[in-house]
Length: 319
Image (cartoon, rainbow, N blue to C red; front, side, top):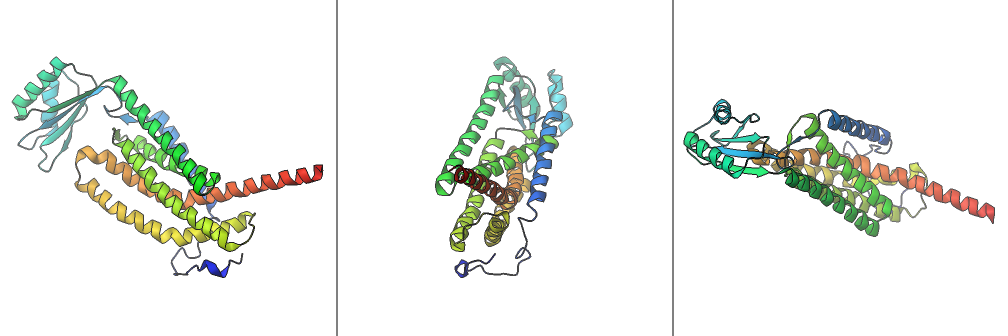
């Protein structure tokens, strides 16, 4: 397809300069479908390892002036007739242990735990409990926030571009969010309340990347000055738009990934869920923006134009 000279597309001789993203759209769609199916199976088989933020229980943060071992912490709680999950040791000097008890302790029990842990380790621990109702409310509010964000995105993109682009953008976001959940389920990583702000952060980042590409699609459609209707014609516009924005997308995700990786390595154990979710979401976000959102829009756009053309043909024949 011949493009208008005003499009001013610069050839930078990058490896993707002539890569046909639309040609491999079915490969991208199949890969995502397989990952989604794997996630569904994983959720049914392994489920999610919910922390006390989403399920009832008690979390005890044990601190000491000296390095402490998992065995010593575990023995201390078993001596109080509790059966804790394996403690997690953190801190620069390995002097902090996080213990989870799958039981909601009352005030008397909390006071007893604080007293005995302080006697043994020298510092009074921080104890937090979550009831089943609070856990359900947190999960419900997180899902509600994601739904509201998705509706807002569809409305915004519908007004700014068109409804089909808003729909495909949200489908790509759901793809990203679900893949984060899949990774946590497959590797049985504990899910705490920080996964909600992490997913919402990825939603904001990913939609920004997608909108930039859609904006180039819109501009290139205007500059082509042709009525496009086939998958080849619209696919050429999509390929051109992705190539024009791909360098920006890669550079952006790399600059964001660097501090996230450093936080994963040197950050506190308490934010490990947040940083890991960001890491997974950033990678899947740039993938979905490039390989899912725009190619899926092109396919849906062609089908929409075909249906409208058939409808007009039927109306003409009826007249």
